[in-house]
Length: 303
Image 1 (tube, rainbow, N blue to C red):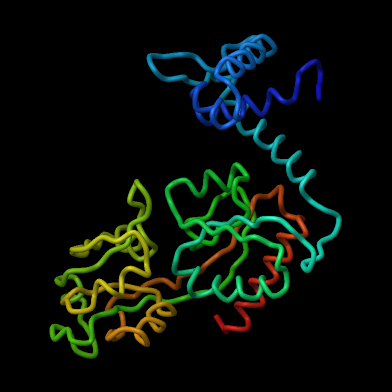
Image 2 (image 1 turned 45 degrees about the vertical axis):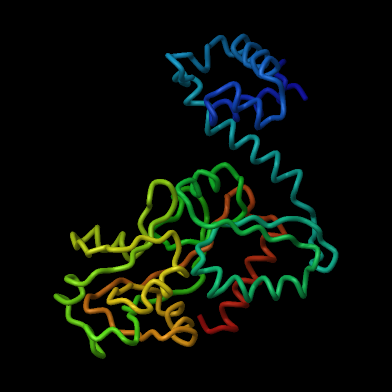
């Protein structure tokens, strides 16, 4: 397809080049040879009369023009993708497609496990792909590489629509045999004792509770770091460690392990869990159906 003498397929190449900033990585993603990608880059440079990506040492750095084009090019491609993929109607019983989302293991256990069971009964041809949280989820949402992001409100993307799913509180959890704490714990005890702490991804991004503590200048003594919430309970058994957990998840685990729940000795904000999607997929019938299914699961579980 051409527009004003520009082959629109070149915009796909430009989009990937601006993200990867490497001809070889772009070629690998596009399933093209490096020479083909280099040739496409040459055509783009000729059309725009700009280097677009300049080789500086070992890095390819976007020019100011390329930087200014990055989001508009992505938006154009996203609009084309959503137009092509969006069907005029959606029949769950006969639909065959993937729904891609990012969510923590906490949300997966508290909400998505039930939602998947319901989706399987209503739409057996739907494939749900769940990836856990990492450092790149907001970028993937912005690029339309994921359909939904399920995350606390303060971690959402500023440029895309979102909707409240449910709220939760935080509690302290300890091994039932931990004799350093009784039925309650003071703030001084809480700050003096060792904790299990969750961090996400290569950048070790903080969980909601850690984000709150850091924001208000509290420094807990972290003795054990784990990559997800559902690893935390097992780390407490047989130790004098504490953990700050979502109340809904903690209540599930005290039924499985010798643990007990204590009230937090500090006032934490209520956690509001959101679902977010790319603005170009606002009217996708399949995604509208899945959002409604999640609403129903929240209501059924009284979350």
